Every structure is written in C-alpha cells, then in structure tokens.
Length: 367
Ligand code: SAH
Ligand code: SF4
Image (tube, rainbow, N blue to C red; front, side, top):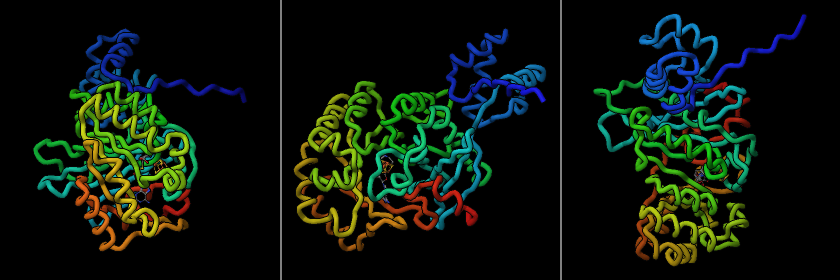
C-alpha cells in the first residue's frame, strides 16, 4: 500500500483576533468571519466547526477539512470534599497535564480560581515537589496553556451552573506543573489571550505567576509592565538551605533573586507575594523567621505560608498546626504581612505540588 501523508491541519487555538481574521481572508472569506470564530473559541469553548451556528454550512465543512481547534479533553476528574476539582487533560501528543479548580469561599455564587500548568513535568527539580521529581518532558505551547482554561471551563460548565452569566473562572494562577518563566514566550502569549476582554477576559490583576526564582525571567517580565501578580517560591532564607530545596538557587542565589524582585516591584509598583512551604524541622526555626524578616521587610510583600502537602516517597513532613501558627506569629511580630494558606483538595492530591500526571498515569483508575 502506498503511504499517504496525513493532511496538515491548521491549529486555530492560540490565534488572536487579528490572526484569525487574516486566516479567514487567506481562505477568501470576509475578515469578520475570523471575529466570529474567535468568539466561539474563547467565549464558548467550542472546538467543532459544526457547532458554529452563525457560520454558513459550506464554510463549516471547509474549515473542518482544513483546520482544528485542539481544546484538550478532560480524561479523568476528581472532586474533593471541599469542592476543589482536579482535571487530567490530554494534549495532542497524548501527554497529560493537570489543572485544579479551587472554589472561592467568599462568594455566594460559583466562582473558581483555576490553577494551570506551563510544562509537562519540570526541569527545576525541587526536592520536595512531586512534579519536580517526575522529571521534565517538554514546554507547553501557548495554545496548550490557553486550552487548559477552555477545556477546564467547558467541563466545569457541565457540572456547575453559572449564575446570571457571571464568569465561573475569575482568577488564574500559573502554579500547576512546570516553571512558567522557563517557558517565557509561550506564557506571555497565553497571558495576552487570557486577558483579552473580547475573549476569555480574565484581568491581569486576577492573574498570578509563580516562579521558583528565575531572576532573568523576572526582569524580563518587569519590563512588560503587566499588572499580573508575581509570586516567588522562597522556601528558605539562606543560600545553603535554599540550594538544597530549590536547585535553581545555585544559579540565582538569594541576593541575585532579590535584586530582580526589587526591580519588578519598582517597575510596576505591585505587591509581591512570597510563598513559603512549611517543612517540619527544616525551615521553621526562629532563625529562619528572622532571616525572612531581614530580607522582606524593605519590600511591599505578602507572605503566604503553605503547610507542606506530603508526597509519597519524599521525606518531608507536614508541620503541626501549633508550629505553623507560631512561625506565622514570628513573622507578623517582625512586621511582615504573613498569612497561612488554606489547604484545598488535599484528599484528591490536588493541592500545591501534588500534580504529577505523567508518573501517576498508571494509577488513575481510581479517578
Ligand atoms: N514552578 C513554579 C510554579 C509551580 S509550583 C514555582 O515553583 O513557583 C507552585 C507552588 O507549589 C510553589 O510555591 C511550589 O513550591 C509549591 N509546592 C510544590 N510542592 C509542594 C508541596 N508538596 N506542598 C506544598 N506546596 C508545594
Ligand atoms: Fe518545578 Fe515549581 Fe515543582 Fe520546583 S516547585 S520542581 S519549580 S514545579
């Protein structure tokens, strides 16, 4: 049998309005068709041209033979007793990433913060993190990052009713699998799409990017003058301990990192969030608190203390509540704005640092 090359389809997911207009014009169609398709993709989460009711039938057929909109499908899902949801999404090459939807407790209506991934696995290899321990496979493209928002929202809407057309997903955190600033260009492009008020429409102030300390990336991001919140995964306030916990510290030690953070803060005047995992017996001494006060006091900083979520096979332990509260008080007494982060979804392994779709894919039958 002669080998027949598979047809090449154009990926429309990830294109902005202008690019979709151009694409439709290249097919000999008026440019407003591009705007119609944009709406279908980014406000209705539609991936089949046949569902686009304001596009002529003949054009729908033609588009179906030429292009695809690869919104990732949800393979498995788990719901926590606290209503947190974890989705396992499948990408085009069958690789898998996870997203987490965290309900906002301060709202009467259904409102969620969505946590998305930027890489399959992570090359940073933090010693306490399930994703870091599973190795690195590849970067996600911006259409795969945006696709997580659309795929998750589409699935969520099957289960939860939106009230009066209010947005279901109001906040977005780049805190899933991967180090966002090691996939800089794709992350930036995804933010632009997620931001667009004619599309997904999640405002920059409702977006947080969390980094293990990619100082060069932080400086680049500062120059973009975005209003997104920057979160730094600090976890230790001396280089010796941080080198062990967050290997990226060897490339960008604390002093170098803090220079980048100060630059970010100066450039856009926003408060910086510092995440600090509480690891029992490792980084919770009085001296650790004092070091943190010295480092962060001069900054406009919020400190988020995250009691460690234990990971099977790793030696780190979740601290007792009393120790967590004590550590938090030391920081507050030292003048820092520190709070203890509520834990969500721990019963379904959806909490921070528990995402590792790839290595666990064999064990997913219990979803
Ligand atoms: N790579 C980025 C973003 C993803 S990790 C970063 O490191 O910032 C998101 C947050 O979860 C980080 O603060 C990370 O340190 C934290 N985290 C990782 N493993 C964890 C665990 N087992 N328990 C609690 N937090 C964890
Ligand atoms: Fe990567 Fe963040 Fe996990 Fe570190 S904590 S390994 S940077 S995902």
